[in-house]
Image 1 (cartoon, rainbow, N blue to C red):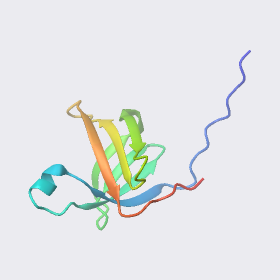
Image 2 (tube, one colour):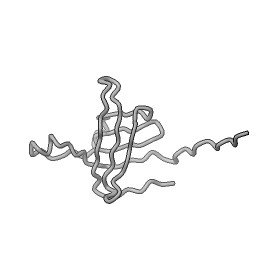
Image 3 (cartoon, one colour):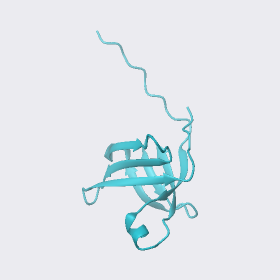
Image 4 (tube, rainbow, N blue to C red):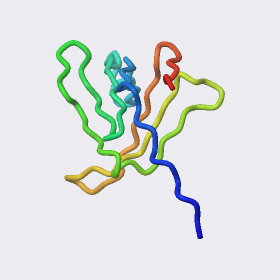
Length: 104
């Protein structure tokens, strides 16, 4: 008989992080990389324009196949998400201005 696992803890709050998207195309064209707000919840990841709160990208949790932080630079965060329209895998890389810890 197997032991029952306790239900997963629900996060107390949604995490809002202001980040800079490092698009190589923008950098190669000499344009400034835009700042964005990253909302991480149990439903997925939303990338918002920080002033207007317009949703730039909405990645549902079941479409995210991988996420990681840089082991040497905790300001770097990345995840891979399958786009619902094109069915392609997209890799998002973020460079935060400062480290943000996730509350328990």
